[in-house]
Image (cartoon, rainbow, N blue to C red; front, side, top):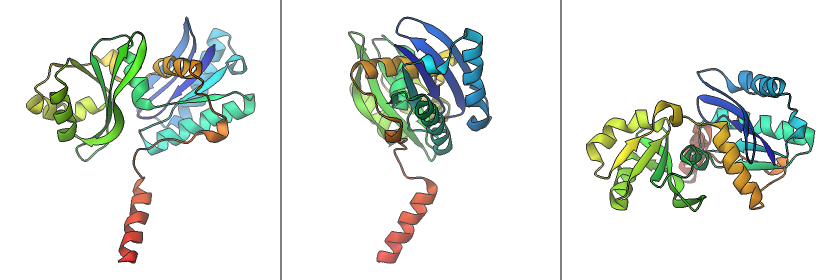
Length: 237
């Protein structure tokens, strides 16, 4: 099985081509450039450099959220466009699960954290058992305090991964009592190779979808949607 994977849920833009045995290519940029400018040229580059064709891939995998509203939409549109044009099935990989695959096989509790602003994080808790990813706590939008409370109750070794580390680092240092580690820079950001790893496992479990079924999972309404909900509630009163 050959996978073309796309990651655009945050600042990092990443694409990869992977088989079940080999990471053929990965192109990752952690820099503030619009994903609409980077993803297709990056895909073209890794295909050209490795003499691969996107049409030869069996599935198109996309990091499906949570994350940046704009980034997720661009990634979804790019993946859907390719899948539709090439008539390929897709895998919608939860972003936080993909981030956990940065620590594939690790025996610690893996805690991906993405900065959601206003002292909140997108987070979940995962661990690997017998080579399979196990969800300890479902992905959610959570405050620093709520997450710290959950982790202190877990009382196991924890490794954090994601840009939420920088945002919440001081709070964690002051409030966590569990044994924890912050991931190093090389493993901290989202990676398309991890999206591909997760996608292969999901595809083997039959979790593929058509391009028309792919919808980003934001975990919370956009600012515009929140304003509409607030206006509607006010009108009802």
